[in-house]
Image (cartoon, rainbow, N blue to C red; front, side, top):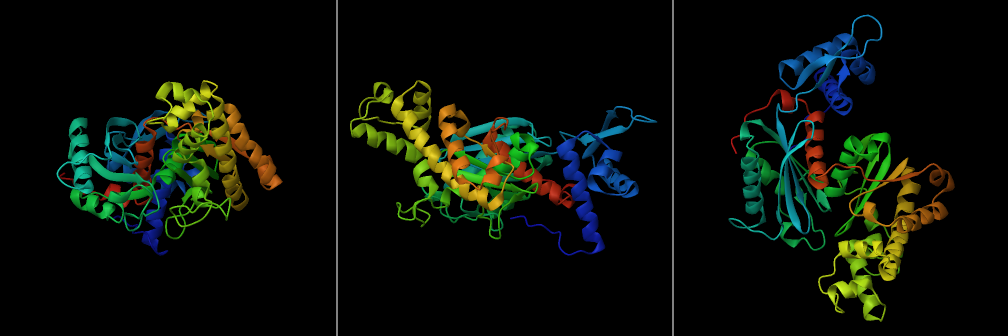
Length: 416
């Protein structure tokens, strides 16, 4: 599993830090002129020119023409060469394995999706390695330009160890050294990241988070995930398990969560919790449009169907979703009072909720958060491009490369 090699404050370390600053700044704001790059990174023109020359010689960066003239000569603009290398984004969810092949500007070139239960050649890791090979083969891009892999998965997990711990309902993938095994198989750096963290980073670079420097990202599917961007950087804490809003308690006398805590937000707000509450209410005699769709037993009821029924004005679905949003709002109050973010960004499935359900969330925040924090808070929905889950994983891989430029400048070929 890849670990950063940049330590200490010696001259060589400073040089690599400068390269990293130039790469990340150029990627996020491309195209940029050398003058703009120097201004944004606080580097001298001479230092900046030397670093840019390295990247031009390595074929990572290219001159793309002239920018608008201010005074004197029109500036030459710089941008990443999109097809110099490519990245893989891998997302493991409780239902699917998704693998995306991306160029260096995070444009998806090919996406492969398979059920998480599928097994080829053995256990889950053997299956994953097979599907990665299949995705690369189907993309037609060849192994020689694969430079990094990002894997996102439900937490808790350790990015440093490359290991998923024991998320609920995810037993086959628990306590596998997934990152090291994939890195060994393909001889490229691999970053394993909590799926919500990866999506928060992607939101910051590509989506609604571009407008903010500090925000809390939250998503709702088979679990309740969240990530925090703090002062422009992904905040993961000392062990990589920070930002778990879903596992903060809103009722210390509530049911015990699989994480070991009591009354966690996820127990009240996650997709499975919402489905179960609809089932219980219907069994107790509540009418619902869902029974017309699925029969009185509500066989096979899904979170997506509850959301769809709410948009068909099904009173029970609306009620349950609004209550889930109130519970989520309470959890977000905890995060707001700790972090004082500029924004809350509502991701996966949450952005499909009815406006009145999301208004219930806003009301809780306005009523319970510290007034100064609530008064200036933006609550917005995701703008991540599809395929969102694997885009987040690829974004984590790209982030790792940009932070360690020697991986781009001192690359060795991949054999597959």
